[in-house]
Amino acid sequence: MITELHRKMTEILASSADDAAKLDNGNAAAGRRLRKALKELKDLTAQTRKTSIEVGKAGGSAPTPSVCGEGKSAAECCGGGPGVTTLGS
Image (tube, rainbow, N blue to C red; front, top):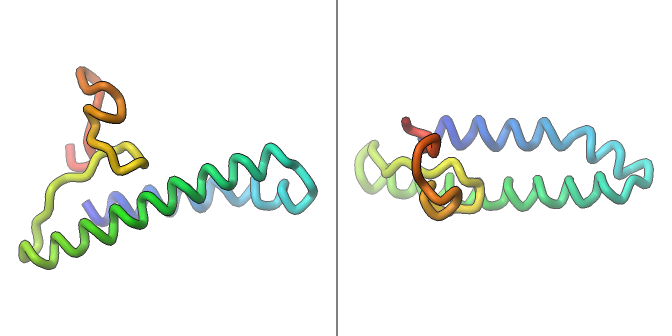
């Protein structure tokens, strides 16, 4: 759970490096993509913090967070149904 959230944050940060360089060269679209990635990173950071607190209180177990980077459940994010997965499944 925490490891998966950390992996996702690392992926977002690594994938946004090109957009950061393009923004330095004046590419406005790259700036929009970078801000979107930073918003996702912020949301995942908050979710990670919340989950880590729950893990601490529960003595090592916490609910499985959704794949959605917006803090929504899988059903809220994608409408649920077949093909919707959570980080722990």
